[in-house]
Image (cartoon, rainbow over all chains, first blue to last red; front, side, top):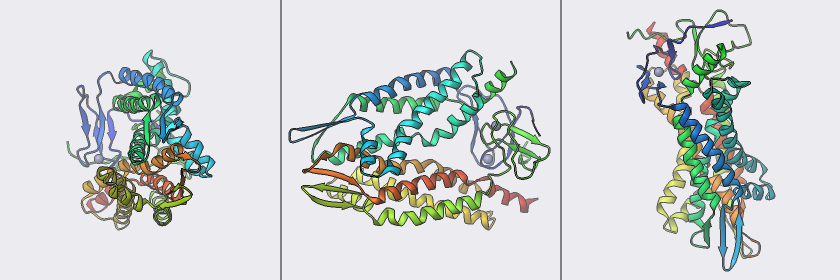
Length: 207
Length: 211
Ligand SMILES: [Zn+2]
Ligand SMILES: [Zn+2]
């Protein structure tokens, strides 16, 4: 029913204006001439950098979930919590909708996003196309706004400062891992060039 | 060079997922063509964009009321409960002299959801009446509403952490309040609303009277 028009045309996602695609130099980006939206970019070593940051992300994710996250000390009483404790306590308090939302956006979706990215990009690195690659990469792209590791970290900081008057809060190894995870995920998103991945998947398809 | 043709004018369709531009010969009724490269459904414009976005933001407006009226959490110390709404939470941060934090929480929990709701309402009205006023600025406003929405979750995350940390039975506990569910729903609804709005509709109005 539909045929691709070759890869020379690109339409602006925000205003639909057609542009002729041209080759960009490293780090350059093409903007829509009418509305200013970024149409496509050229990122240096995009695939390699995304892979490195995603692999780092997997390790940091495991550390962030295994080690103690925060320790609460109040008049000799010590209480340790892990990343998952918040979700568990919300469930205990019957706030299951909020609990599921927090679980999804702070743990499950970030994990799926990293795994999905690796699943698509690792085979591409050796010029292979993984099974259901297009579906998986579409999923990775759709999950992007719902992976809220960065926002969660700010929530942690606000909570720590709020309690600082009242008790002693000691950050655990998981908290540092989580902060590093936030950085590695941000770096992976900055390095990823979806446009390039789709073109590579297209080529891999024809081999 | 600057001929200003859109994909739609040229009978082309832009896959919003992988950005491949395809020529569609004939669009079957009640279904959407599938992108030959990524397999996603392609649409000229997002389906029922206006109706969907209206429905989602109206739901968000309604839930915005309980989210602000009811307590979002209650600090129970020595048996006495002290409920906090979103605004009184900000206020207590100010009273404790934590100004930067008060500003941050106020911005994320009060300003961002309101700006998002009012901004989307404004964009919907502008498309409804086919305004030709500053489409570029309105597109920037759209990108802004889409980008900032997730930051409103700070309050929800803060509560989940406080609930996890403060569990000292008789001495102090923190309970999440009913407003937490409403507020979380407002954040999710406005995020989905921003995603279902199609900024290209603003530019379609520019072309209709040009041509
Ligand atoms: Zn544009
Ligand atoms: Zn596509």
